[in-house]
Length: 424
Image (cartoon, rainbow, N blue to C red; front, side, top):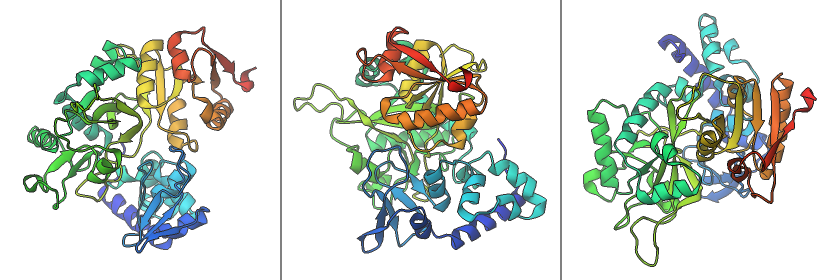
């Protein structure tokens, strides 16, 4: 991974700080056409620019006591003015975010002796990684793998996964594990990770419990999972008899490293007997661990990432055909069923530079997204063809299944490929 020298980083941070001061977040929100509405004495709300969620009422919150950051209470997006402008326009890397915000190229504003170095890194890296707010992917991979080794997959979660189409091989080989709901258990796991040499401070999903936590013995200690605010909102938390609060699903990059963890949350805690036979993870409540935790008790933000799924015993270096589907779990399941490379996208907003870069490694791309993503599908289809690669849209028999994932798992008689007009 490209990292900046200390002197180049210090010079870059000065330039970024100046840009933030000259372009306040609240002003940029208004410039992007979003009206701020006062929600409380020190809080204003606006519509979130992300299309990863369907809620179109105001959900993006700015606390005027710290107006340099925002958080969306619906999708969990969080960050500063650079993150906001990237979210609004679909750019993950710092160079383009800076240009959109200021109208100037980043390399023209830094010390000329560092310009080439900063340009190279900023065009390929996220701001939070460059600044060190989030650990490099190698560190996240090491810590996440160590965490998953210390967990097991609960029987109810295994049953849920197989009902969704996962095979026994998927459950064993893709690293799915149950996250304990009991805070003390999660704290003990973190202390074990630290003792074994794992870094937690900048890895999304790990955070220190607040000093006002209800159990005095655990205050200030490292924990993993959703923060307390998210726990309250999604129904997670400690309940008597609760054995798990959700399924951890690894998110992998193109090299196979685990770069994030998705928590598919339980709708009800396991072990509750009041007429409930067993728990079921929520279809909708899947959150990237660490979202909203930057600057809070040592946590690092869990920015949503693309997921690269490969056949468990396949060769990830053989890149010919890539399928594009929605979600991490769907990508894993379809990869196993089709014996193919599959890219799982987290939501359908604007096309991002990260997405276009990911698909550029393949000769042919097959887009298998559901009807509600038609505009995203058509734009991606066009961009791939314009770049000179073959692109197909997957169409399917709606009498076989209402969603494309069901038809892909039924076999090739339930779906067909619509060719790219550039290649007709």
